[in-house]
Length: 385
Image (tube, rainbow, N blue to C red):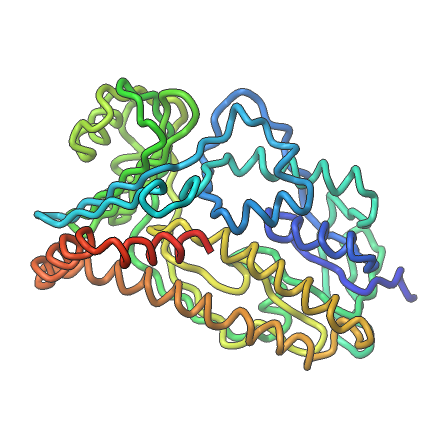
């Protein structure tokens, strides 16, 4: 039995999948979005899932009308970033010095997710299948058939996998991937701080660890501590006062007394490389297409770049079927270099700071870079793109 036909069915309504669906609907494509669970309505609790949204991603979300739905009181601009090595190395990136208004904007994942969902519902251009799960997929041309758990079926010219790092769409489509565990976990938690951060983000490299403090509105910060998994488990097991003390000490007391606002949680860190992110009738975006170390905070921005590029490519080739592999390969080529570059940078930095033999090199490099304004400006531009 044939199901309802769409040009595009997107599987996964996370930040990247929802943005792609919203943009495609605005372009006049017939789109369905399949998601297991609707997003929770945010409450006053601070979300431990925090993202540093680049100015380029922010502009994209503004064009979609999503950013305007965010509560300005829960958003924090980053004006400066202080990065310290494990010895004498240090570098400061400053928006004012680089001639830009800000380096990034810190938002809570849940609130951005809610804003995207509100925009999708307000538009009414996208068929929302939620809660819904896919039982099986029968690949074919010109249409692929998706069988849902409730017995209904959907047919699509193009299936977009936006279903995260453990993507079932990637698996079902036979798109090979290589997962490289770092043997580390990222510990996240939010704190109130005794000294105002003034919109400054801090990052420390030490003992193979990377500790980041991202500013939140008011005297608050969001912590991401990338560390060996055994140490991560120890940190998560600490009581509130002990954890705050550990984090305060690791951050050299930069923001004074810390008070835990949200329980700590940990997630595994891994590099994911996908041999090809497209095949006839299927394309991957976001974490389904790539995974990077969080030290640069660029994972979600890469995903928004995927969404924008895929939608633009489909819009430019309206005469072709959405599943036309030639169109999809053009999308893949466009995204290959930004993804490869970010994976190389984050993977390289991880190894550079985990190798004790490279201590002098990395610290000297940071010190030299801090005295080269053109280089720092280039770093800022790369982070903002």
